[in-house]
Image 1 (cartoon, rainbow, N blue to C red):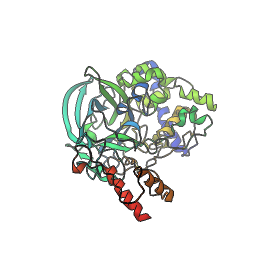
Image 2 (cartoon, one colour):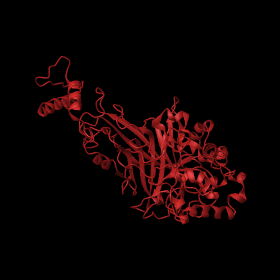
Image 3 (cartoon, rainbow, N blue to C red):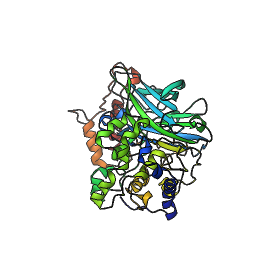
Image 4 (cartoon, rainbow, N blue to C red):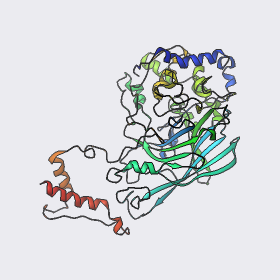
Length: 510
């Protein structure tokens, strides 16, 4: 928790908005009994016991922002499968086929979804007699050497009281960008990424596939809050890890109730088919971090299975949060007085005059005012630093939600000014300027040799000896080519070809 500098005017911006809302008869006048549902959020990198064991169904983060290059559209990004190790083959990272990946929109503030985008996936295998994800260099999404592929459909559901009143398929058999196996397997991954961006009827654009995890933070907060003495800050724990992403850019008119009601609430869920063939919700995600560090263990799985309209049961977790008490115990920083109505006002209702819907039912979701123009120079602390286009008005990829949340939890909005943070201020990779904005995933071939670092003769000799068949004296052209069973000439294993190439290059070197 390290200091961060920002202007005094920026420091006061969100606090001024909140204090004005309270004084105008908001939460202070209504009292907590008038809140109805109030609850928690999730940035679920392994945030709940049950879903942590089934990563295909585990939401990691949700982002929503007015598209900076197309301000008449809104971009929503939802991520799944935390901590994808780039070299984690041969079974790389796919979306689950027995799941419904849903993005919910509440466009009138009643804690119910009125619009739902539902993604479902199908896996295709060209050759099941090889262990390989790809059987040669992949240059396109329809390359015959890409052995495991996925496609997806999107349904647009219009809802009333959570019951569908219409269903429209808006995408059919769209290809998914594959896992980035490595530079040899996918020499131009950027081309594969571009081919996975698909235009839909009505002006929407969709993408599904692997991406660099855009969340940046030091996760050693769980080691007694950064080591108990602030010695464990400054390292982006998620650097080098990937996620599976859904990105959807839609004309804003598709998700708002009307032009004069520009605020929408957004959350994502995963439903998994059970043994009876019924889909059951197992994961839920709105605002970042709270299901990790606000909800206690007894509530985490319950929250993941619930909807915003049921959030009243979690209100105490927000008004009497555990985290400030832990910070006080370890670092002797006084916890703000309870009940924490300031947290309820910001995260469950939206900021008055910014992203609060009229007649809002307090509930946990990411709220975005789609009429706020994108910032020319986004500030990482968003609204807290005077940038109303950022968190908690939606969430951009560049928003530093860890620092913003720490400062608010420790009382920034109730007079306890602070500059707490984890000393990780930006992602390790730059984001794109156009949809889907996410950085390309880290490739599985990363490492000293992949980066072109010369390991010297010792490395070459070691590899050469390892590749020499037992009993070989090193003379002649030792060839190990294995044909993939039933694959035909086109399915010759890359391993065999690589061995031949290595032996030839090694002879030239000596």
